Image (tube, rainbow, N blue to C red; front, side):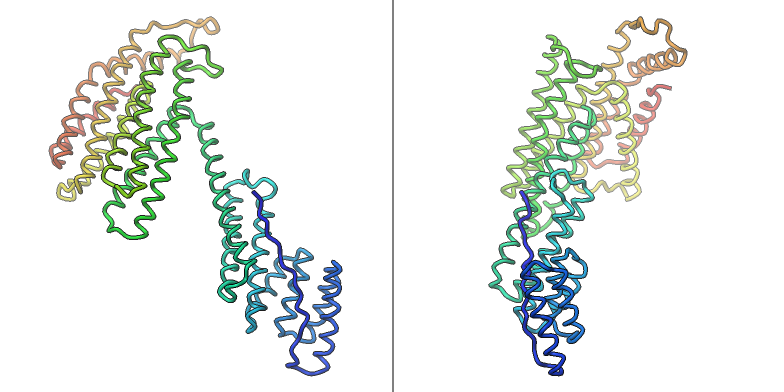
Length: 448
C-alpha cells in the first residue's frame, strides 16, 4: 500500500497594488515569467523569477506561495515549507487553505521518502520518524479544512493517510510478532506470554475500578484487541512445544516423534488449548465491556500457562523461578506489614496468594525433576571420555542440589501453601515467617 499524495503546484500569479506602482508592475512581470517557466517544468527558472518578484514585494503572501511551489518542484522542501508557512498567514482564505494543503503534502512526501520502497521492513526508528511526519501532514490537512471545509483534496488525503497508517501498523505488528517468535526459544516465549497476560489482567483490574466513560470504554475495546492478539500466540506456542518435546535439548531438524514424546505433547497441548479458550473468552467479554467475567477468564489463562511452564521447564529454571518469585513475595509482604498489614483490595490478595501457590507448584515440579535426574545414569561421550575437572564439579554440585531438593522441597511446598492461605485471608503477619523460611530453603537447595 503506497502513499498516493501529490503536491498541488498552483501559481496564483496575481498581485495587489498595495505598494508603489513601479514595484508592483515589475513584480507582476516576474510573476508572469515564473508562472510560464513553472508550467513548462523549468522550476529553477521559476524559482529565480519569483525570487526577483519577492525583492520588489517582500511582504506579499501570493509571491511567497508561488515561490514555495517552485522550490517544492526543485525538491527544496525546507525552504518551500518556510514560505508556505508565511503564505498560510494570509487573510485570503483560499491562499491560506492552499498553503496548509501543500504543507501537508510536503510532510507526507517526506514521510514517503523516509519509509522508502519497503515501508513494511522499516526499523522502529524509521517508523517513529515517518509517523511523526504523517501526523504533521494530518495536522496541516485539518488546518486546511478549518479554513475551507469544502477543500476535497485535503479531505481525500486525510482519509488516505488514516487507512495507510492503520494498514502499516497492522503489518508492523505482524512482522514484530513473527520476529519475536523466531528469536525466542520455548521457555523465553512462554514466559513472555505469561508476562503479557499478567499485564492484561492488571489493566482490566485497573479499568474495572474506573467509572464508566467514553475513554474507559475505548480503553477496554483496545484491551480486548490486545487480549485477542495474545490468544493468537498460542498456536506458535504449540509449534515450539512440539519441536522441543520431539527433540529435547537438540537443535532442529528434529527426528520423528516417539510414542513417549507424542504422549507428552498431547498432554501439554490440552493445557495450551485451555489457555487459548480462556484468552479468547476474555477477549469476547472485554469486547462487550463485561469486566468481571473477563478477569475470571484471564486468571484461568494465567493458571493454564503456568501449568504448561511447570510441565516443560527443566529443574534449574523451576528452582530459579521459585526463588525469584518468593523473594518478590517476601518484599511485598514486608511492605504490607510496614503499612499496618494492609494487603490492599481482595483482588490484590488473590494475585499474591496465586503467586504463592505457584511457588509451591514449581517446588513440586523441581522435586520430581530432581528424582528423575538422580535416577538417570550418567552417559559417557566418545568425543570426551575424560571430562574436565570443572565439568565433574558442576555435575557433583547439581546432584547435591537434587538431593537437597528431595529433602527440603516438601517443606517449601507446605510453607508456600500455608502462606498462600494466610495471604488470601489478608494475614501478612502470619504469612511472612513462612515465606522467609521457604525462601531460605530455596536458596539452600540451589547448586553451591
